[in-house]
Image (cartoon, rainbow, N blue to C red):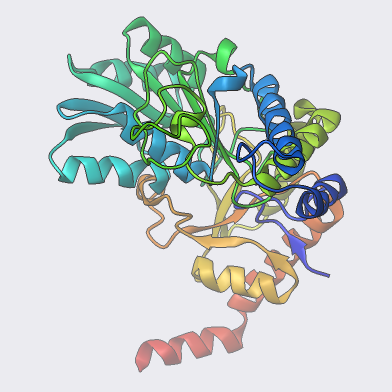
Length: 392
């Protein structure tokens, strides 16, 4: 039986109610906001209900809740829609390429300047470093709520408060935190929260969300059909239409609505507790294997992700061995080269990321297989083979 421990990329399997919602959407729904006929009307009602469900879950306003293709799309809309020529932006050294690359593209084009925030294990030190990077033209701070490599949770509430006190836009990447941490756009103080719908919210792939408090207007990344203000050659000036072009992912919206309902029933606290327990089980087991390095620090808060490496084996070799034993884990740089540069893991790590459907028994079997893998690597036959390879 194949066991998925790569849920930081996409949760799999999906809950039965999400699968039913997708199947129902294919049969019953068409295009939202296009036409006044019965199919269009019931589809628009579905999309509004999904938007309302998301907004309530994150304490956002319904009209300021934008559906996107994924978290990468949402972050690009926010970053490129907020920053203007001459602006300065700060981002952390744990960022995903969804933040790093659009900022680098703007910098290479000569439009913005940037500073990189070195995240510390000490939140107070991180905030001191942030304060030291601010310039008169600093427009935005973009940071992940939790690293997709190690799971380290940044002091996002304090960063949001800092930004609000200085009229700086705080754009948060919640891809690894939404559905796991009790996030609230209103209470936590972020100006813009971007996330994926297909990870901790258990929706289908091709779903993302951008939520804004409208303190900082976002210029549209794209223009096109919205089903509203169709006579105008300009994009509508109201949300959500201003930031949503073309046919919406109606099937994805249905899945996301069902996914959030599922998370509500399980409770965010319950999901965090279950998944964190499995991470601790793995960490405790791996602590008994000296050849395995786990990238966690004492007194640092983490979402349920564990990155590790095995001595004398590349992350890809380790993940390939585990795959042949029936375990799916992601190896490599995880689209976050900055985080790996910080860790000193130039070839990346192997990442363990459980979900609500993961079991303690499978986690312990994984640890046992890793112990067996280390013994294989230490076997005389393997050592002889490796020496022969070095001589060639």
